[in-house]
Length: 314
Image 1: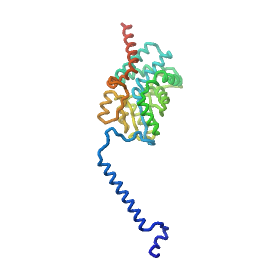
Image 2 (image 1 turned 90 degrees about the vertical axis):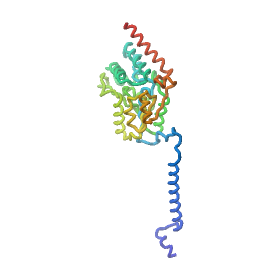
Image 3 (image 1 turned 120 degrees about the vertical axis):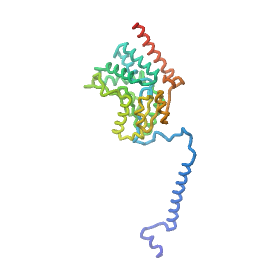
């Protein structure tokens, strides 16, 4: 009994031999685990398209940032908004022709040209000047139902929903007015929107911008600022866009996606092994950015309007 006296003060329930067996078992388990890791490292890689689960469920340091025009929605939001305002007699037919041409060009080219976007922005600012912000927000809800809802890309919408389902915030990032972007984000069930801010005093638009349109590098700065405010780690975030103008934003995050990409973005994405998704239908659509049959009517209508205007001028 004296030989076992050292067990009594510590109230040991196991014998020295069982402790030794346990330690040996733990060491063997650790050794086999390391050997398994070595085997997995040496094993041939799986299929190239096999990717880890993404987005990561429960990663609250991650968020997703989606461009709007031709990424989430076919065409440009500002043009659809202009169409809705014309219907409500906010401006005259000649201004509608201008909007129609801009929309037709955007669909045919499949890219964002800064001059065209700035021209559209200036048109919108002059149109809303003197109107109340609350009025435009209310009208925006109606215009979404009339012209935008049916133009949402289901594939991109599913990507956004995957982030939401993973418990992450999802933001639109667009050169469109923030009021329009906010309406679209809310209707899609997203967290919110970053967009161009039009100056208002006492709830009434002045016809001027605060700063500049949220385009190109400005988008990257907005995402950076929001990430800092939200406590996000950009290396764990994702961004989605169709345009090479958004390369600064895409380069900012750890998971960049090229969605319905223009030629420059497609080439850039392939060089850097970024993920690509193209939801346009038909080979022609993939080649030049026309959303197949869904966009042909708008293109024809816009082009016809321009031709008619040119004839009248002659």
